[in-house]
Length: 152
Ligand code: DAT
Ligand code: MG
Figure 1: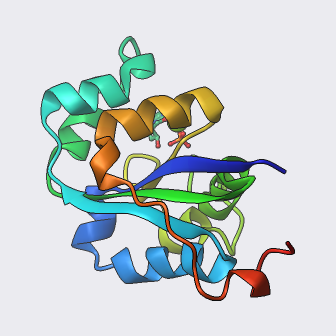
Figure 2 (figure 1 turned 135 degrees about the vertical axis):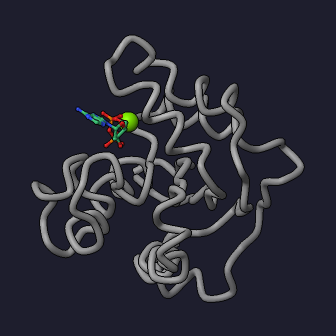
């Protein structure tokens, strides 16, 4: 498995509901490395770029209204296979179909309030990391306990 980086964001509902610590903790406990973290209130322009692939969908305007309605917590996580693994931790888009044990399965009921975003592939991860973060905001570092999570 190659070391990857992925973009994850706790959406405004997750921030408003006080779920930031709960969600961050799940990625930390899994063993991924946090290399970028900030709170951002997204402009409509940023939101539109982020959800550009959905521009023609009927829910697009509501999605942009929602994602710009308050601060989000934007993150970049690093690790072996982190892109697909983060999607598994997050769970299915429709929270009622998301497995218990996943973030959406445990913490959400509505597709329009599904708490968290995660990049869906390598190209999207690259695009979204560069959209939300500057290079200086990302940190290369080695956790002191790394050998207890990763064989070297
Ligand atoms: P995901 O967030 O799991 O990657 P997606 O990329 O298909 O899902 O859609 C982006 C977001 O748009 C999703 O988290 C919630 C919203 N959304 C998707 N489909 C929707 C629908 N049919 N009605 C309302 N909102 C929807
Ligand atoms: Mg998506």
